[in-house]
Length: 480
Image 1 (cartoon, one colour):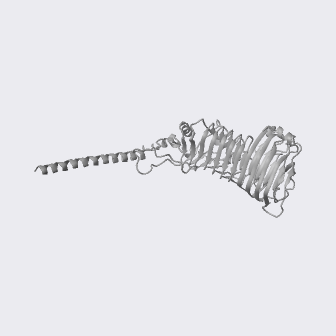
Image 2 (tube, one colour):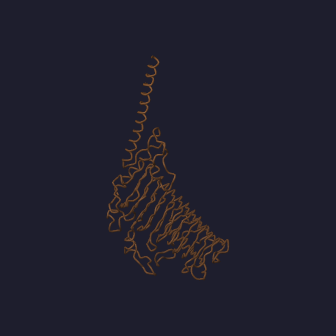
Image 3 (cartoon, one colour):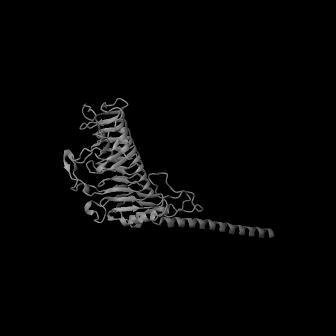
């Protein structure tokens, strides 16, 4: 009897223990399900679950940054979601009509205060903002990510009178910042191009009006360690993108588009900026594909397709008798199509300074007018005088430049200053044939010194050997 009593008591205790454990398991499961459901009902991105209670599957990260597909926080990063500042959470409507400037400013202010903050303009919205300066200094790693459409007001009539007409978006005094996304930056340029101020070329040799006080679309000013990638930038009223006074710039996988006859719509313009890389981009516009102004050094352009455009230009330099210094520019693996110019260096008479250490290599031309040109008599009118001073050009190399040229102009044109010769021009593996017809125009050279390392087409017999007698005086007077 005692044995039977003991067995019944043991069975009762075991049943109670199992029930208690099952209750704990259900409670933990209920806790996780409730927390998950709560997060799914929250509009904003919730913090990641602590690794102590993390489920077996990986948590859903915020959208990755397009320029870095591997981007994503570590499993124990509990602050990643809080670093996303979606402009719609700050009141942006994104209907293509409402002014969303205030929301963007608020999102920027919040993101600026945290490391790796992301200002997000999400997909499937069209945001309109007016002229705005996004200024620093900010915490490092700031990202301005546009996955939707970010647009200017629609033409000068919609531009607020109190806003600057010189620029639309300015990024100022920033370090370690990225401007990226899969979206489009829309400039609504047509109404600006039609303003009756500056004449420009039209179809069939006609002259059309051009921009007045038209804004550049995106400007980076006095900033460093910048990355711009992934975006489509189009229809700017004037320059699409400018960098001034910057250090350490990487541009990758950009698409820039505006019509062939849109005036002054340079794709990328840099000045007073050093250590620049422009890579793997497509530029189709109405002016210079890429223009390099004074004060630039250590610039690499690689894997860019231009055209139609006005080609890749160094200059114009030396305007109003100013001093300009440009050095160590490498342009390689480029395609230039249907363009008014190919590889161009242009300076004004009366300037000073120097352009040195320029390399053009592996360039494919397709129906390009003025394929290779140095013009030290650059002038926008016929009233420019011939002056005794000029920017000094030296150490300019052209290697493996091949393709076809527009027969309206000679394929190679070296017009150097009467008093300050161009020196150390090197030509190697240059083969340029007419796009139409069979006549190969002779190159033009004036006061240009250099060497033809290989036989070229057309033959460049006009380069002078050696150095000019006045070389020492030129070097001393550059001031660079």
